[in-house]
Amino acid sequence: MKVYGVSQTSGQERRLYVERGAHGVVLTIKDRDGAKELARVLVRPDDLLPAVTDPGPGGWTVEGTSPAHGWKVLLGVEVRRNEVWLSARPATGGAATDVAVGLDDFQDALEGAIGQA
Image 1 (tube, rainbow, N blue to C red):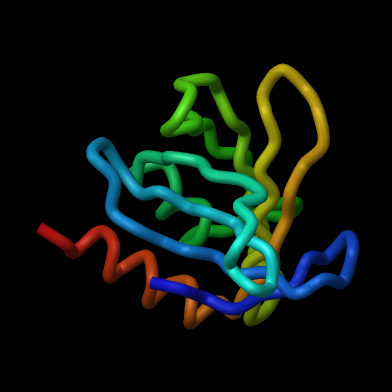
Image 2 (cartoon, rainbow, N blue to C red; image 1 turned 180 degrees about the vertical axis):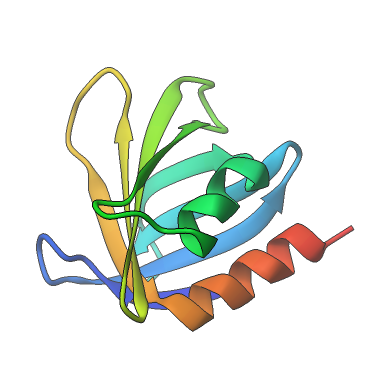
């Protein structure tokens, strides 16, 4: 499912794709046209759900992996009122890619991905 969002660091429009993966949920952040992939992370639903349903101050960091390469990716998840701010970065360091999307839209997309057979 595609969710429209905005980068909190650059102000650029972004797209978040939420899909069911072989071993969890795949979150893909793309540019506004959806043509250029900026980040992709595979996370376990059991790790991601508490970050959204029971948010704490400052958010959560969820460990995931790059589906294409297998390296560790850290996903920052922060719920701010009616939006979710996601920030993906390699565990070895490097620049993070972020997107903020509506909380309801994200929950619907996550429910759809988890509920797929």
